[in-house]
Image 1 (cartoon, rainbow, N blue to C red):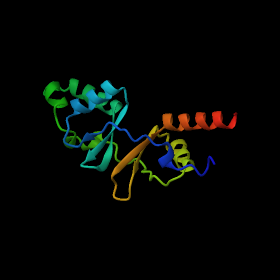
Image 2: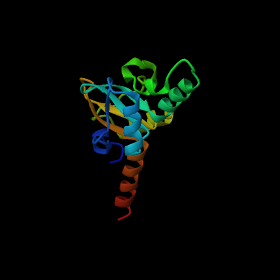
Image 3: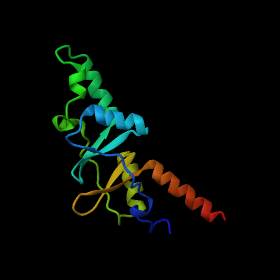
Image 4: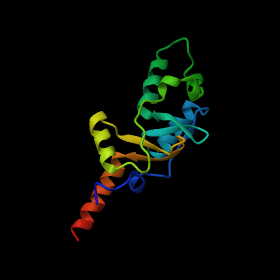
Length: 145
């Protein structure tokens, strides 16, 4: 049963997302308010990449030390203007992929989260290490009954 489990059975679907035209401040506010470390970046419903709180902090700190730039202006800039702040090279998952594929990608690349898209690259969910742990816990509990 465990090997046949599909990504669609374990992925999170109620996601907090941002548009590529949103500001860095908006992305940061969502992450702080919802207590998440990453937010998918979309253009319409198409998945573009992932923005993380680590990347935002890194860029903010860099710009704090740039005396020629106003930090408030920086955080109000659209994400579109900061292409390199978006992590675009993550592997993509599809709903019909197996949990085994997820585990292999997490282990090999040390991912904490992977986007799940349909064949048109529309975002349909996210699989995180927390999703995996919740699934394994549920599986163990069912097996012990």
